[in-house]
Image (cartoon, rainbow, N blue to C red; front, top):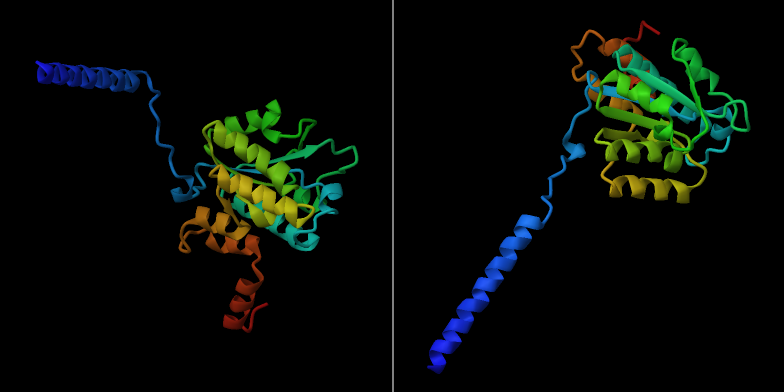
Length: 238
């Protein structure tokens, strides 16, 4: 009799456990596997370039790279994107205030792109900026900004949260000390936002050196080592 009682109690316990697990399975939220952005190649047909706050006042404080190199990389990236037919959006924070106008090298390179002025810190939170991105119908948002940990990172994080495939161009961004650079990179990588460099982003969108636009894109990128190799192979040309 004692054996039968223990057996019945065991069966009851197993039944309760099964019902509890079944109930949890029905009520627990379904976890959706997020796509790995690091595996997605950039496409000129699905990308938009967002350049945030490359303003003379902010650029003058950059210390994690040289001002000259930063300007070169931003302008080269913007030119290459334009050559590939990738929409370019430029925005600035209160340009008539302490941060100054967008660097003239950039506006001269893209004279037909109007700079969007804003007051909110996160460019993604500005309706005009977000509308400009949404209007393109593209889902890959390539972002560069000064500073890296705020002007580039904030919209990249927000865009990813909104379902976009966002990337940050490290060498077309800049910040004011190494601590800020480290903090910005850690947050981006922790959120699964890939970082890239200006030349890789452009070449990735180019896709093939046989593309009719390849020569123009490489010319836009103006990579010093590539220019030197070309000159060595073509000594009679400058």
